[in-house]
Figure 1 (cartoon, rainbow, N blue to C red):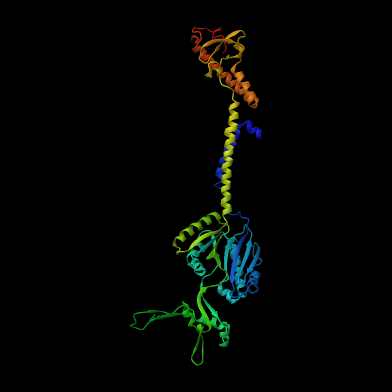
Figure 2: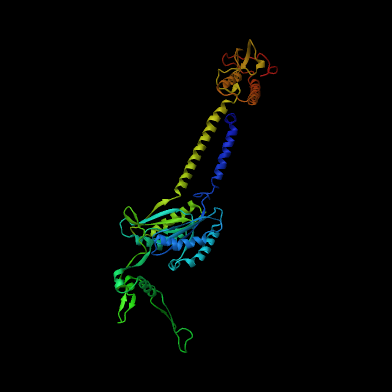
Length: 479
């Protein structure tokens, strides 16, 4: 096959050009994604059981959910991860070609059946069900290099100003913040103190829940009103408590003598983080990490570019001494692979052009027969026009300056000499190619010789200064 393309350079050039055109057209039509659709679809459910350990979460939360979700249509497998911080992550994997929206509906319907068997604290906190790819697409780190802000402030700033913006980016299914959590009112209880007063932790929880509420107070002068009433007032009562002092004034118990046991008498109250189970640092500075998960089936490169643009826009509003860094980017292997493919494609195109237009082009120019001998500019080239009219003793030959001269008949025709030289220096071409080249050269030389003889039959010889006539008349000779 390689010999065929060497002997037929035009065919090789055409095929190379067609291949390059086809590759250039299809490279813009190929789908771009981080991975092909071979990973199973996942539906993830998270639950929180405050204060419980991993074993308690597994027995009271994971097991009832597992019993109800098991056996869903087109489900492959499922797994539950319970942690000592009271959280549970339940992942259900489905077939690749399944409808992920219908898969989520199935899981939510089965979770509704399992909620009756879950603890009340878990149902009060709520179950969250999302579509996820199972691994983060991007991970960012928000830091305070000069230690101006702590982890709680950084994570709370993320939850208020960044999380909602990134969650609205098309293709993002979940934005998860690691490290410190949102602000919360922390109540640190002294077990010895509440034991001496005859109280329990449940008494404190019930008192906080009963007094830290929003109380609608109604209206004054609402319809129907007696005659003469012109105004109606909406009463706005005191809502939820705002600071540690207000929480400290919560009444836990009223004694028989008219005194009160307040929350600040048995506990220490402060504004802190919701939990301290995980902390993040970057180069010794407090930080908050947040990961973004893409929706299954979305274009990873486009989603990553949208997120980076959104982060650059949000960074313009950040407070001083706060910055974000891209810690993990799972699209780098894809982008680097695409760059290497483009480099390889450019190198292949360069090699094809080098082979086609240098090596094959040079060989094609050698295999062409020499042109008519009278077109050479050298004054010393003399050859006969045709083998049939060459004389053994002496004959008339054309010179390049269109004059007559007499030379020995031992001179060989230029066409034959050039052909033999080309045979020695270049590979032998197919017979039909050589026959066509010889026929074309013979016809062109005959036409030129006839026209030149007719125009210069009476021209003087430059070397002798005399006019010579050909040995034969032009009409009787074949040139």
